[in-house]
Length: 233
Image (cartoon, rainbow, N blue to C red; front, side, top):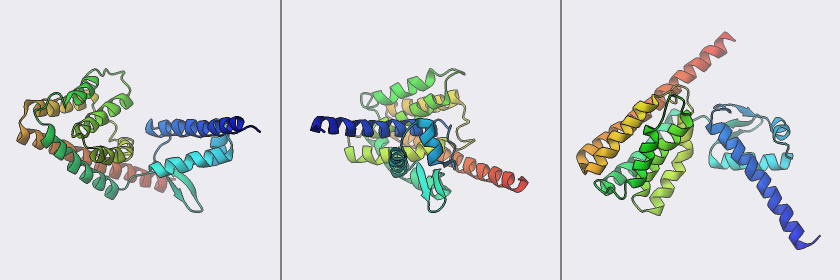
């Protein structure tokens, strides 16, 4: 077999795995594969029409990203965050975002990407998918950190995005008023653009505190519901 043909086959295999990874990732982020869902390799192979090898590589990739967890002798499951993981995630967020607020407060040019994210949130209608609001929400906070111009801090925030997306999947936490969330972010943005550092950091800290508390409360409620359902069954 010629070298070019071998390389083409290798590229095709990589493309197949990447396609499966992207499809499963979106199914998780969209809530079609709920938290705690067991992923059966054979079923997924049939669904996607791929080999077991390709599926195993795809599942390993998603496990490495932090979206799946492998339990020995049980299988692979969509990851469920614990309260400690949520608290740790938001602890890092405060370090990054409050530092960013100090640097960019009053700098409208640096805050332009954050404004675009807020404007997208403000354009929501009752028919707007929740996922669009979620993505704009994350884009606002990512833009805030990116405005620092620090590759290390941007990568640090990027490492939190998977866990933040998993937070949005918790029942109750994702059932938010989209317009209210947009107005809350607009208030944050206008405070930052106005250059009032004390007011900006106070609003941002309160925003992060509320988001963390909402996620923890939603997690506790979902765990109570799961226990009640298990008891009834």
